[in-house]
Length: 302
Image (cartoon, rainbow, N blue to C red; front, side, top):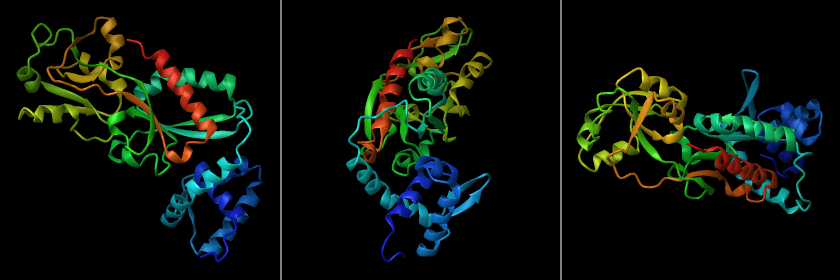
């Protein structure tokens, strides 16, 4: 272990962890790649750990490196914040941000967000990260992503968040479905064959929890891992699904699908954008968060 930590080396280590590459860290710090590699070699010798191993064309931190970064990331941000006095200049900023979000939101804002970045902050890179609900409470604390966009109930209570919109949940099915011309009672809803969108593959959702309060269990006959598959599956089968209205709005407008009110009391579930407390003074991240929030507000129309 380092007897007297070289803070310069820790700055380089922090940059590598954020960029997930030697080259990215070099660009971020305005250094050469050999200089960054030399710093890594010195850190390895001082700490007695390889720190990074090759993974495909990139690198992956060792367990020790991940633990070390978890300890130093917040203090490093606080140090940077202490010296951050000038207003941000998005047009000059060189940053890379990771956003965890469902494909429904990617389809909604990714192009207009790119167009905005090209106009206002052309050196900002954005990476879409899968929204894995099994590990959702650690996405921000583990720095898997810098921002998360999802329903507020899935966020860690300690994470910072801004409420965006309140999606409407509907029950969708094809226009000539056997239930299309009938009143959708709780019994008929429970006995139907259901489609569920789930990134994790889990076949249990809020709907199953609500049904359980009545002592009922539904059959989740099929799952998909992205929202764009829902209209196709519904139009060609007897499946029904409860989903946010935007996911099926286009096919409803075209007359391919119909909507019914779910026979369950679904409490309002706001869509939120969230970030970790360590980024409370990261002005560029907060700038991006505000831009994302504005775009979702503008484009979420049914």
